[in-house]
Every structure is written in structure tokens, then in C-alpha cells.
Length: 451
Ligand SMILES: [Zn+2]
Image 1 (cartoon, rainbow, N blue to C red):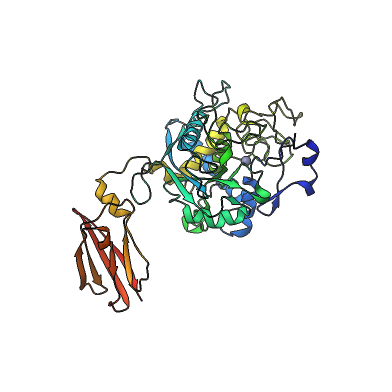
Image 2: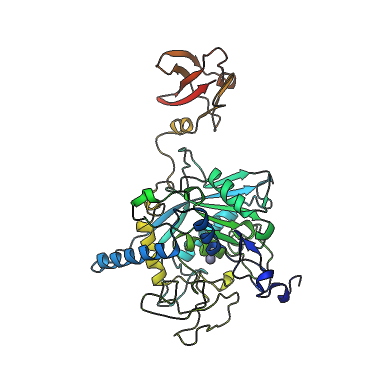
């Protein structure tokens, strides 16, 4: 073994840093960092004054859970929510299917695992027969309509010069906001290759926000980073798609449960040991995971043997819970209390409640031409000489007309070939213009500046 246990003792000096914080725990067998969501939450609170503290969020959620119980006491409505997903595959130019440019089948296998786990699907690894086990009644689908209204398979391949991000802070602050799809309509997942001090990391997620005392205006600055990030080797399931690019790690995290865990954080769940070693239990909590039906635990686990880290509290540690650090093949349960948290977040939290009514999993409607025009752009803007109409899908429009800022026609032309997409604005005076592009009965008007 390359890694011996002595490489990863509990000595804090030897633990890696992620988001400027020493991680709380690494897998003693191989040094892997199972999750950095708790560290990321602290980092976000430090860098964004509008991100609520853990206490603020938990006070808000506890109140919402009480309200929900009161409303639902007579009718327990069961309804399946489907969350549209976009997976941004970040790579450095590898051929499709090679290294971090993971194949479509690997992405699709991950969606399948999420559905097995969040539906407690019989006959799959996501099934358990415990009374406390919950069908969370949430399903996931790869988006079929992108933010421009175009047809998509929900997999957004993004080429960057670097495949490996030695600074996770730079990945978080630059790659995520530049590639995110509207987080009101999509759950954004990024796959990438973690590097530097984060090279042992499997994944991290952004916790939901409360709606804030002042409503949605109180929330700001977190939109572009909202979502889940997973190391590509831990994304998807070898069971379902054996041809994928999985890690050869000894802990068998090749079955898609890193995403199940991180999506759990995205939907408001805490680690079952509450990120502390306290064993106190009351009617609403088994200390800081806010779920009394997950027995009190004072530490995380990496192996599937039986543990009882809180012998004074009832029950063994629930090492099969998706919100522990156990390896993928051990995990198979979300509890009823965890489901209540998730459902309450889905009903009330910004950028979670809006996912419930998103139509991004339906194919575009209204005709192909319209949607091709909706993806249309002009560049450069501002323009100095040539202005180019950019047609993402290569489908030529019929014509265009350019207007000045007071609505006078400056130029109009038919588009018969790609050459007609480049317009010489050299003799236009400086100022604001509008270009109206037509195709069939559809049109799209864009503003540009000449200077
Ligand atoms: Zn976690």
C-alpha cells in the first residue's frame, strides 16, 4: 500500500486544507477527503455577509418544519418532485470519454443512482427495509431545454486550459459562476479534477439559504456558486456503466454515492454526527443533525462495521446513512426526519422551491427555428468594424435589419450564406444600435454599441 495509516493520523498538521481550512477528517486508509461541505459553508459565511449562519438557517428551518406539520396534520400529501439537472463536465481538451471528459453514460448512470437512492427503489443498492427509511419522493432528470431554449442532453462540456484546479477557491469563484445555468431552474452539478491540497477531495455542495427576514432581497452573492461539485472519478456508477472513468480507490467509492451525499447537503441535510462529538439527544435532534431518528453519533465512519460512538444514547451509529462518510456500498438510507427537512427546504428555500415548477426537463416546444434564434448573439460588442451574428446551431436566419437609437433603419439585408453574417459597421457613427434578426415568423432583437 502506498498510503499507510501513519500518513493520515489525527495530527492536525498532517491534514490537508480545503477552502483555507484544515479538513476535519480524512479516510485513514487512503487519505481521501470524503466531503468539504461543512468547510465550504464556513468559507462562504466568512466571504459573504448575506450567507446565513448555521444557527440562522436552522432556526428558520425548524419554524418552517413546525408550520408544515400543522398544515399537513389532516392530509399527508404525497407528491413526487422532479429536479432538472445540468452536469457541467469541466475538461482541458481530452477527447469525449477520456479522463475528466467523462462519457455520457457515466453521467447518466449518476442520475440513475440518485433516483434509486432518493426513491428507495426496490431491487437496487438504494433500497432498505427499515421502518425509519424514507422514500424521499424526489427524482432527478437531465435537462432537455437549455437556458436559451435549445434542445440539450443536460450535459454541458466545458473546455478550460487547465484540467486540474490546484486552487479550489479559484474554481469556485471563477469556473462556477461563468458556467452556471440559472439556479432557479436547474440544479447545477460540476465534475472536475481536484488538484493541489484538494486532490484527495471527492466532493462538496452549497447548502440552501433561508428566505431571510426581509425576503428574497436579503439573499445575494451565492447564486453563481449554487450547486454540487464532484471529482469526476467518483461520479456515476461502475455497476450501471462499467466503461466509465472511475478511481481505483480501495474504498470503493465508484457507485455514485458521493453525489447522493452532496445533493443531500444541497437539499439541507447535515452529517449524521452533526460535525461534533456531542451525544446529547432530545425530541427534535440527535445533536446538530436535527434528525432524532438518526441515532446520536460522535464521529464519522469510513467502514461498514458496527459502531456505537454514543453508548449513552439509544441505537448504534447509522453508518448506512447517506450522510455518513462510509463507503458507497454500505450506504442505503435516508430517514423520515431527513425527508421532512428536504421536503421543507424544497417548499421554502430560494433556488430550491423554484426547481419544483421548472420545465427544463421537457423538450423545447414552439418550433425549432424559434429556439435557434433564441441562442443567437452578436460579437464583438462594442463593435468597432466588423460585427458578427453568431448562430449556435449553424441554422441561417433569413434576414436582418439594423436600427439606430431613435428607430431609423440604418441597414437591412437578406442572409444567404455565412458571409452575410458579418456586417461592416465601419461607417456607422458611434452610439447604440439594435439588430433585428428574422427567421420565418420569428425574430430576435439585440442591442449593440459602436465605438
Ligand atoms: Zn458531507
